[in-house]
Length: 618
Image 1 (cartoon, rainbow, N blue to C red):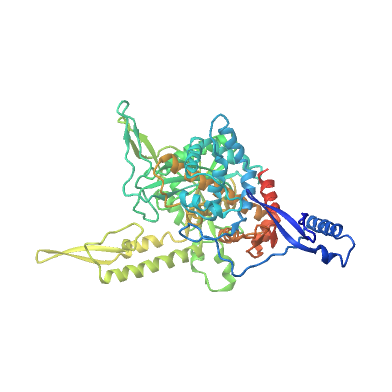
Image 2 (spheres, rainbow, N blue to C red; image 1 turned 120 degrees about the vertical axis):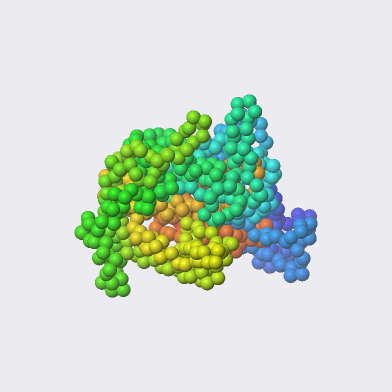
């Protein structure tokens, strides 16, 4: 701050003047009126010296974080007219600075610097990737929508839409390198627990009417399969899909991902992805954990070598007759909590409403069955025929493994509750069933309906009744669950590891629901891959933030954290300062404790926020 007055005036007015730099804009404002020369003569013999003393006083106050400002408000002043079609908020988000802290710690800027050091690009791909990543977490939108709202961030980054597309091309060109780089740098932020690696696949749909065509090379006859293909969707989405395979660690933090055509068998994605993972780990041992759909014989064989191990869900319905007999043979079952012998019959019959049985109701019983010499586990492997096509054949190889069978009364009650509701819906359907639309699905309520035909007077009449045999068959498996593994650890430890598979489902939920990773509107394969690389980076940064909060003994939902970051906005007060328009909450307090950014003040000077940005970016 400095003294400002008209040196040519005989009776000048003295002001404390302050300069402001707000982005690229620099302004000066008289923030305090000290008084006119003639007025100050009444209190001092040297008004100029007195005014300089006042300026020095204000400078000292500013050093201590206190500044007194005089703001004149003209309630008749109009908002400046703009050519924009829609009015927009002038508030600026500063909550993204917490995400920026982690983005910088991942040293992604160095990655782009190294990959572009020999190129002649004139834009900064790191800045583009930075804000595409933040937008995916805070304001998920199309790439064009993200570009149109860049001025919502405090930094107000400036780059063209074409720079977004070029950055995406750059990302895709360095796919494997980028994924490995993120893993290596993430180890410097939090300790990565890779003792168990969870794997699963999920589909993402596209708003297009037809799938991509396959390309056949005229010279070699090589078939290049289209990327977006029809496939099985849990949401029954009638649209072309692509498939994402995702590996996470024991804390639910992403390790690696792969992208394949939506029509590919998900089991074929596991081994190529896992081989890349072993390269990233540089030979470090780990346990592969997945559901039954990703536990083929080839996958189990691969994870029986190199010091690796596997824990995969095993379908009881697909077991051989001998193993099924062992499951339902009510002997050798033990209580998981105490290892004492308990029968399935007792678990099914005790009074669940008795408080004395509440501990038992929440407990499980288990049995271990050796399956080393058993070949019929309902597993199949791919066999390449002479014509080059592949065919599924029943697996005959022997893999060292055991099956842990568990029974839970609580799970049995839940499964029967769900089925009873479905049966009631089937009964309603029977009252007015339309034979023309009747189709029996494996998971639909129509599976409980049986059609019988009879001839009367030369005519065939169809009758529909409830299929009690199907209901009884399904009830046999209620409460039962099985896990196949080659580990010698205790059943309790193995079950505990398998129970954490929900974390990978949660990762897909976050990407699809919170980060709006679908539907995807890109047409170019390279851009599609880059889109999911951005989603992957966003998920990694979010999970790292969540982990750092957990280490601080503070736990919040995704919705709590994202909403807080979205709401952390400031309003520009005449370019002199910024006023917080958000409240101090448990989430914001925890974030400030972990990252020490001090974004908990009511007012900020522009230079203060600029210093924070500069400090984060180094």
